[in-house]
Length: 355
Image (cartoon, rainbow, N blue to C red; front, side, top):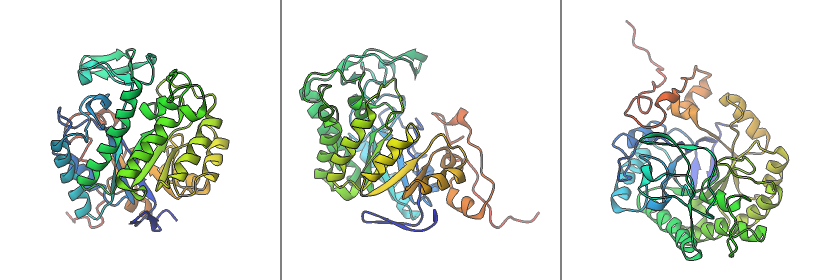
């Protein structure tokens, strides 16, 4: 089953294995993908689908050092090199559009981060000076929230210009869309605020609608991580918020939902029942890729996303099909740096040369 083909919108995927988005922090300082990025993704083109690392839709959306953007012509040109390389290798690739919201630091971006409300998250973030405490973000005005919706739509259009097959909205892992959904990061009193579930899901829904209007629903997916608590978020009412959100997103006919599951099996199943299109399931609690694939498919997933397994194994589908040994990921080289731990993981040699 994981090696059977699957139709996703206008794409025919050769297998059901998705390379999950993973921050690698190897872009140039201006947010242009580095010269190694095209090779990195092209090496992994045998995935049924690649979803890139998070790509900021605006300078204000940047949270981490050396992360790429999709809001300048130079960034579009850099991503065009990436998508051309992936397509030449036979692959398919979506850009994950990610606004980090209140997760950021001026030492990384030059500005205080913004968020739904002026609520400081617990924890720290890596900066050029080392780990530093998160700061209290600047609360976005209603007009700025509406402008941010358009930033996502503009970035989606730039992604298509850059040759991507589609985009994934990052509504998970404690970043801006997720912050609007939460009880403790969103204390707003306007129509994007906490007065009702409909208000708290509004930013996610309006962003998805704007992107669909710009590039078409068959090119738009979304990632959600209900109730995970990532980014110091509280979601005690996730059982109310997410079924309502998923119903609105289903009405927009998004091509897929990328669900980070495991926080609540009951909620995962309820979401699956309410989602009519393709479901990508990511279960971080299951480390072994074969076990994760089997678990996900048994739970109704159409596609299964894997992160560190693809990081360390550019030819992961082949290795899994053959039952071959897998490379281990070196997390000391996961973020930033050069080709080491990025493009130098060995490929499986099917025809070893005799000594």
